[in-house]
Image (cartoon, rainbow, N blue to C red; front, top):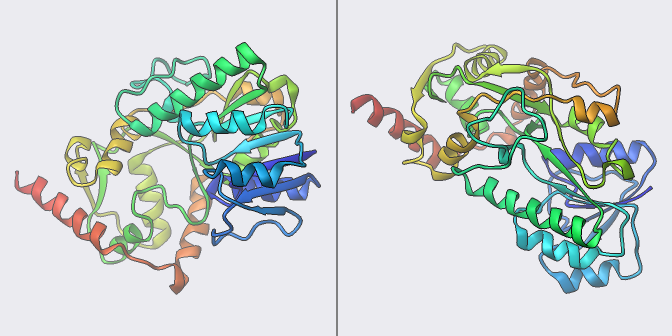
Length: 325
């Protein structure tokens, strides 16, 4: 199959690019070529900016694809441009949406793909919903071959589950308090990008998935207390936690707080039956305890040890001011 990834070198898309290359797909990556992640040697790189429509039109003018995947579409405007660029040039267009678009608070658990899309708390999710609505309309009214994929919290070796990445690990090493929202007992699903890729590859070029939506997640469910404890144990540190309400956190860091208010504060458990109908042997094989080992190894290298001093101070302030209220 001839596949075009818009992006292809991000947290999730890198794992999918690597697996596509292993499977022998004719893989094209359209991006600016600025990621620190190395694309597969076999991939054909189209250096360009998807936000520059004329630039992309020139890059793809002689190309047609079995599937186009946009890993970096975040709004209705973005997917409208994709529709204009790829109508008649692909047999399938896959939009990477977000499981945070599902109704909050959850209408039911486990979450299935037929749960309504409604998130009044987080603009990121709202824009993904608007993009999905546009794509659903052009599929139904004009036959644009859309498949929607909704990842949940998916990580690779560079991404800690807790907000702040190495800054949090550094706080643990120094026995400083780390922030856990609420009481830490809400349930959460973390998925390794390599596991996600094994499910995602079954969507590519599969005409049975056109007009459908799928989430692809692990079946492992952990509380935020358990997640934090796993990280601290793998670090060889004790867990020194400060429990802060999401409403307090949002006062100090709006995006962090809204991602909690709009997603992470709710129990989030998924039913993966639908993707297994397409990929019967799909199963997430990497537990978070093993995934964290790769993360800690990554951050053991000095060149990856960047402390966000502003965020570090902000965390100290949020903890101190909540304690003193």
